Length: 280
Image (cartoon, rainbow, N blue to C red):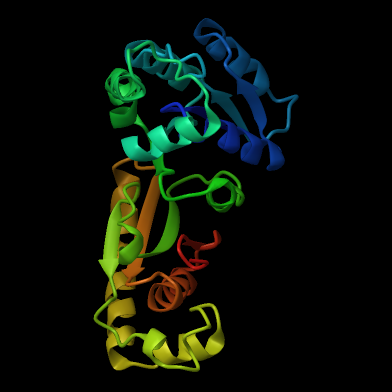
């Protein structure tokens, strides 16, 4: 079944980057289509004569999207095509201010100051964020990392039930705000303090062997996998489409990377792990 996504979010949060990444995956992407045309175009794009892995409507470049209107369009889309979803792109205010000041673009929301414009748009779109099927916080991601996040989330193609994504991160770089479950593995000995392991990452076999060779790590992984194995069917029964699980250590380069990769292997997940902080 072709997926249909309404992609929206705060101005400066990365809609154009997401659009380009989905296009590279072969999706049919339409930017800033009038809302009254979305349902009809969605029907045409998902007709049997077309062969797209997904259809994405990029909404909100004008800054004038109203939550109630967009949600009404999504409800109408659901009646025509049950695979329709909403993706919301978010970022902290200070990050959005820095981005707008860096590129010197004017914020589309009318307000006396940039901070007021961001606050006004955030308030206007809160209803959409609350109803979104997938929220991605781009505050700690650069353009390449956001493209990789989209590739790893959607590159495996549509699924009939729940799509599970794993993220590794470092607490020193901030807790990810767009995940559903967070597990902390900082109780494990840190390879950073082993001279020959420090330059490596959890993707390197010596680090993986060091981390996973500990009884505590095996216990931790087994517990997390056991919990997810019974929770995933429960989430499916509740109608959840996306589940993002984050594994954190101090810097996000060693322990969390190795642990997340092992959890992915044991669960048999097809999508790769998004290692947010591995290059820091």
